[in-house]
Length: 370
Image (cartoon, rainbow, N blue to C red; front, top):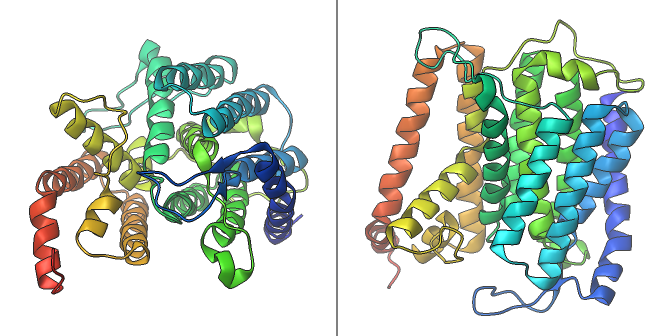
């Protein structure tokens, strides 16, 4: 079975999924209503994440073996999506969401055995092995990614586009390191996300009902991203999920991805989350308190339209992923890669700290009155 066949089937299945889910969402009240923070028109079905999850489960169940790792992922994902749907419908407390995230991440780590065991040669003095810290580190990484993708979901197309960029990066790393299963899953997710984006952004132009991703989707994507990236750093873990039915593997022996390389794939969601949380803590506010100080809000205050903001941020994400892939191709020392990433992050924090001044300067340069 070819990759093209699997991708085509996934795309068709995704569109069919929304034909079923959208009426169910409207009937059950699983819709997003406009309020002081949400400035959209009408009630929007919150089924994007549910559709992406169900598509991956169906296609993955068709082409991947059923074993301890895949069952643990399916269980943790289902738990996270179920609670995400409940949160979309009933607005659950932050504390409950965090407890469920902890439970879902623990299932992946302790039942599935998926762990980040090393940070690589960050200091130029050999591998930094985590030992007993591998489990708690992986759990925290999964929870961080879930919240990062949840927080970035602020304007039409942004979460879906950045997730698409991330899985493009996963596919690139998989090709570079001859890892067939991550490549297969990345292509399935990219096809599913294309169908979501067609509904999320196409709207009237494509005669499709507009939908949102919802908390179920953003947290599921974060969970899957860290799960994949953790597997890719330890090819021995990948062996437990190899053997896709009829799938033609990438030629060559699977090699490990350097842990520092994966940071570039999720750079913007991570930087946005940590920057915003640090800013809220300095203001003595809850780090999970909703506000309008995210990266996309800053661009829009600077006079950019929603589509311009989407284009700029997505382009930045693509450039960061391509830069990370280039560093991996050239096998730049991990310590240098880490320093470059920290430098980009410091630059982002500086811009965030001086966001109002920068926004005012951009508005003046573009001739837009405040």
